[in-house]
Image 1 (cartoon, rainbow, N blue to C red):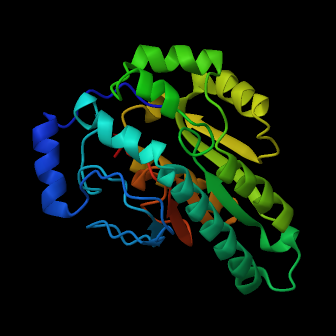
Image 2: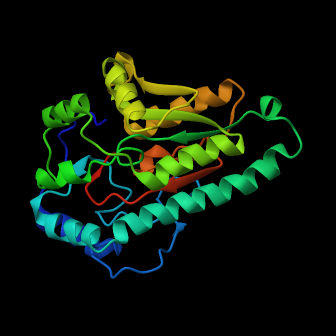
Length: 263
């Protein structure tokens, strides 16, 4: 669930120029095998694997939405099947990593002693906002987000829901960290359960004192608190760099999101 942040790219032309300079220009590639590779973000040491978000640079410091200027490119990416193909590939890579990490980290030690954990984001990680964003020309007002939250108008994202369930079966404890605040918690919990996403250890939401924090600071601090309780975090997965950057996870995984960016 997003915060009401108003900063954004000044115009599609400005964003397009930034994309051209960084090699992350929005494109609608032909359906092909997804290249899940290291995502390098200046100033961030966290190891993150994923696919390029096809938006202005991943080191951006302000929130923005793709808007009407990129609507055709985003819709073409989705319609090609590559968007879902990329989601599936990242989720599979995360499961493969987790299997190996559990052996390296826990070995023959019981899960109760080893305390392995994984962390999931919610929006455009477990719940799919694409159709709603597309209807709003990828420039959705915050009030509209709140309405859709309450209606639970978002379907589950199958590859990450499958990863969520696979992680539990492998013995990892699942935590969820969302940008939604404490007041939204009942709605978030109800929607996840309605979409068959259950069995997490804890769902973390923002307290009033945390509202001013960037997503990166808020989420990395939340992972640090999980570690303080003795858990070892194998991976953090989300659709934003801020879902796993900032440390306190062995590996980050970045799902594609060509619709908006949250620092």
